[in-house]
Structures are given as C-alpha cells and as structure tokens.
Amino acid sequence: MFKTFRQHIARSPYQSMAAILVVSLSLFLICVFFLLGAGSKVVLQYFESRPQLIAYLKDEAKPQDIELIIARIQSTGKAKQVTYVSKEKALELYKELFKDKPLLLEMVTAKILPASLEVSPYNLSSVNELAEMLKKEPLVEDLDFEEDVVLNLSRFVSSLEKVGLAVAGFLLFIAVLTVLVVLGMKISQRKEEIEILKLLGASSWYICFPLYLEGMFYGLTAAIISWGLSYLAILYSVPFLVNFFSGIPLFPVSTIFMSEVLAGLLGVGIVVGFLGSFLAVLRSARTVR
Amino acid sequence: MIVFEKVTKKFGQITALEDVSFVIDKGEFVFLTGPSGAGKTTVVRLLLGEYLPSAGEIKVNDKHIQKIPRRILHLWRRKLGVVFQDYKLFNDRTVEENVSLPLQIQKVPAKEISSRVDKVLALVGLSERAHLFPAQLAGGELQRTSLARAIVTAPEILLADEPTGNLDPVTSLEMVKLLKEINEKGTTVLMATHNQEIVDSCKNRVIELDKGKVVRDEKEGKYCKNV
Image 1 (cartoon, rainbow over the protein chains, first blue to last red):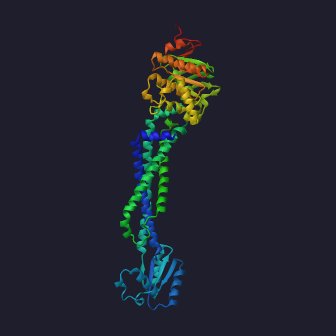
Image 2: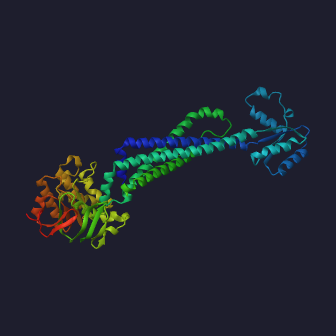
Image 3: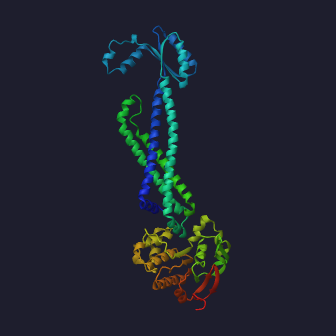
C-alpha cells in the first residue's frame, strides 16, 4: 500500500505539487494570522500587566492618609493591586530609566518627584470608575491612565481573532477543496486500475488507504513548508520589530513556541489532508468501494 | 460446485440472461460458448459479484453469491481467479509484480509470495520475462501473465473471459493447454469463448448461450451443435 502511495505521487508529480503548494499557502496565511494574534496578545498582556492607573500624590500626603486612600481603593474590590511608590522609589526608577542620559539626571532629586499610587484593576472597564473615585481624593494631585491604549489594543486583538478565524476557515475550506479535487482527478485517472484491484479481491481499505495517505502527505508537507516560511518571515522581520516593540517581551521568539506552532500546523495539515482525501473517496464511492 | 438456478439478469429493458440454469461440478472444465451478446460475460460478472441477478439464485459450494454483503465481497473474489480478454495488467509493474499483486492484497508473507510467484511463472513459462514490463511482452506472454496472476492464489474456480480473444491460433492453443493443466490439478475452469477451434479440439463440456438463454449443454460438446 505504501508502494502504491509512492507510485501515485510519482506518476502525477505536478498535480501533487499543485495541491501541496495551495495547501502550503493556506496554512502559511493561517500561521501568519495566528502569529499576529499571539503577538498581539503578548503586547496586550504587557500593557495589562502594567498599572493602568497612576495617581500622583500631593507633597503633603502623610503615610496614614496614603494608607487610608489605599484602603478605600481596595474596598471597592475592583483593584487587583495597589502599589505605593514613594518619592525615593520614584527617583530610583527615574535614574534607572535615564541611566544612559546623565544630563537628565543632574539637578533631579527625590523632592521634585511626586509620590504615587499605581493601581491595576481586575477589569479594564473599572479604570474609569477608579479614576473618578481618585479624582475626588483631595490629596491626589493628578491622574494618569492608559485606558484608551489598552482598550483599543484589546478591541484590536478581539477583532483580529474574529477576522483570523473567518479567514482561517475560508483558507482551510480552500485547502480541503484542493486536496479533494486533485485526489478526485487521480481517482478518475485510476478508475480502471481500481476496478482491476477490486476484481483481484482488494478490500476498500486496500484501495482507499493509499489515497488517505496521499492526502495526509500533502497536508504534512504543506505544514512543514508553511512553518518554514513563517519562521523565515519572523527571522527576517525581527531586527525591525525589536525596536518597535522595545520593552515588550516579544522577541526573540522562543523555539518551544515555534515547535508548538509546528506541531499545530502538522495537526491541521493532517486533518486537512485526511478530510480532503476522505471526501474525494466519498465522492467517488462507486469507483473505490 | 457452481449452481445457476433460473437466473435472469436485466439491464433496464434489455434482458441479458433469461432463466439460465446449469450446474458445474468441482474440478470440471466447461466452455461457455455463444455469439457476442449471448450473455457469456454476464455469467462471469455474476459469478464475480459485479452484478446481482434480477431473479433466480447463484450458489457456489452452497453459498448464495447474491447474499454476500458488499463490504466482504472482496473475500469471495479472493477465492476466484479471473483471466480477461484484455489482460487487465498494470503497465507500470513488471510481470513479477503483476503476478504477486493478488498475494500482496491477501497479505501473504513476502517470502511465500516470492516462491509462489516463481513457481507459477515457471508453470506458464515466463520465468525469464519476470522483470519485463507489459509493454515489452507479446500478446501470448501478456495473457500468460494474466493467467499466472489468476492462478497464483490457487483459486478454487478459474474464470476465463475470452482469454484467447486477442491471440493467434497457435498461442490460443498453448493458452488452453495451460488451462487444462491447471484444471487437471483440481481447479474448476469456466471459459467463455467463441473460438471454435479450441472448443472442438478439447472435447469438454459446452454450455451454449444464445440471446441470454441456455440453448445447449453437452458433456463432450463441440462449438456448433450440428458439426
């Protein structure tokens, strides 16, 4: 049966190549969408993990006042974490941030930097509510929050997921259809051969298995090609993207993650190939069964 | 034992066989004769389970052929050997590969395949052609390859549908000689033919069909009744 499968491919290599390339293209685009989605999620998680709300405190705020404000924030049950950043800690952070620019460090002391409260809410929709509450605090000088950035990014990721799923579905349909058409043509070409095999006592499985194997081979080869192309695209674009996403733990893309992507693509490839061949066999049931 | 009991086969309005009845005993050599369109090939195809009879019963060794479920029909076909007029060989496989195919289908171990193929190729005189492809063989050799493929599984029944139809007279006689040798080893042979010379020379049982009906069944018959 394995020999028959090899013969099928060797006999019409261009048909096989066409099927593999179309499935490769589909899987590559699906992979690109997946990588974009996964990357966007990392970016979103990065922004979500940062405090979305920073309340700068007036200089006259005393430790007991600050503790009271923290208690009031926590009593709402909407804040995951509230961190107090003192003037000294703020100076440390400032120095760390501008350690390469000594000019900016001159003349800066803890006194001129405000103490602050960094608030991370459980839910992005609570940012506004917490901000409103903090605005009313007399010891809060100013508020800084990244609600728009995170919300927009969140909406983008959600849209990307929906569009990605729709496109992936469409591309998978094309891939399955291609395998179906190519194998259907091969079954038609081999109609007489199949008839002879049946007369010689070949079971349906003996006739169909090489076809299933061929479909799965298309899917597997296409998965490897599309994964290779995706990896190449990532390696090529990393130098540009590293600067753009500086600070976000996106690069280098881990080999474990890429291995998981390969495993996923191989799985999808096998399913696409098998489904295409199964439908081709089903369509030609009178010939092969 | 092959039993046809009032078998009728219709294709739409066309009646290919009508009330055909005969019994072929185990180990018999029977010629199925008649003009083109008489229904000879339909008999062969009914035995192969390719067609189901419209009426009547076909039994082989007390087994109703028409009652064999389609999903296990291949198991029945493995008990038969078939030789076709147009050989039905795989052109991209050598003689040896063509002959070993039924054994591969039946998952016979490779070692056994090799020895059985060697034996059967020696029997049909094709040992030296084992590695040639069908395109490199003459008509008689192609038909001998087809015969070797049919008998390599040691079938109980050998069906030969016009096996000499594409062969010259001398090669046709050689082919029938081979079939007789196989028959002498105990295989039941049913050969559909309209080759008068062969039928007349063999003096075997003849079942003559005409327009789908059995018009003659003679123990040591000739091709034509009055000759």
